[in-house]
Amino acid sequence: MVNKLDLDGNAFGAHRVLEPAGALPQAAFKLDNDVDVLWRNEILVDVSALNVDSASFTQLWRAAGGDKVRVARSILEIVDRHGKLVNPETGSGGVFTGTVLAVGDALTGRARPGDKIISLVSLTLTPLKIDRIKEIDESTDRVEVEARAILFEAGQFVEVPTDMPAPLALAVLDVCGAPARTAEMVRPGETVAIIGAGGKAGMLSAQVAREKAGATGTIIGIDHPDGNLSLLESLGLCDEHLLLDATDALAVNESVAHVTGGRMADIVINCVNVPHTEMASILACAEGGRVYFFGMATSFARAALGAEGVARDVQMTIGNGFSRAHAECALDLMRNNPELRALFENMYAG
Image (tube, rainbow, N blue to C red; front, side, top):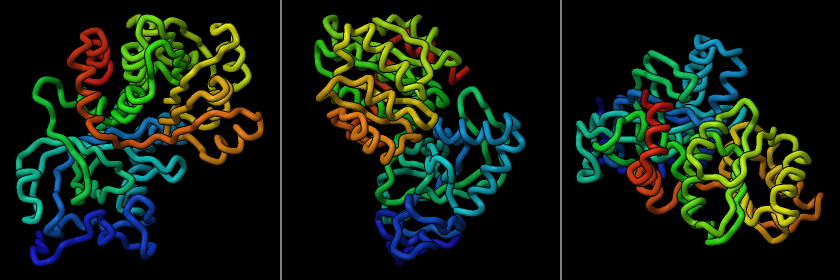
């Protein structure tokens, strides 16, 4: 390994951008993923698993016809082309878990070799070199790998918690932005509709929404007929459970209107991993309400222009994967809710 101990890279990782000039790593077409070179403000990690973003994995899986070999080939081709894992169709990536191999001397104290960590920044901006894909678990979107990755000075990560299995922590932290933002948005007594409520982001958001809205609030869980709404029902978090295809905006609008007596939802949380669900979210929301688009399949243009087209005055928030204490918020949901944790352990750490 070559250590550039006399050189500080850009804190945001711009020194790793190969093209186009002037871009930051997330927007870059190609990154320098030479992991045999370490700048003094970088961390090198031996990666054991990728938790691919749900929207990205769903697209890769469908494009490959459910063939794991083809999915693996697609992932390797993407990383070879871009120096990072960024799905060209969804623009999303995921997070990783692994063991710290080396720490640049400018970051001494942030991590130590041997630390087991989970990244809190997207694979779409993370220099990644995959030597081998060992296994793909389509039920959890997890890809077991032999790989190495670079974390930049601004990159966030957490140590793998000692009080829960690493695969469980990885799955939860992959979507920790959703429950954290839900906690910030929901107030006592509000009606909250969660679209994609049967997924991991949806279930975590439902738990938070139930706690924040309280006994006077109403939680509506909406998921596809092929989804996991029955598992959500077993948790008893929602007052209403609707089996709906979220790409059918009118059906969602009519169903939410029915269960709310026409009042609609004060807040809509969209955790769906497929495109074209923006209008269902907007039409489920009350005039003057708020829509939070967490799903990476969201189109800003479809949301903004669609709301204009139906004359619906709603405040829309595009998901930000980072917020202060978002990791602890998600991990604490596992620590403080035994039934939710047991369900997640069965799904993601079995």
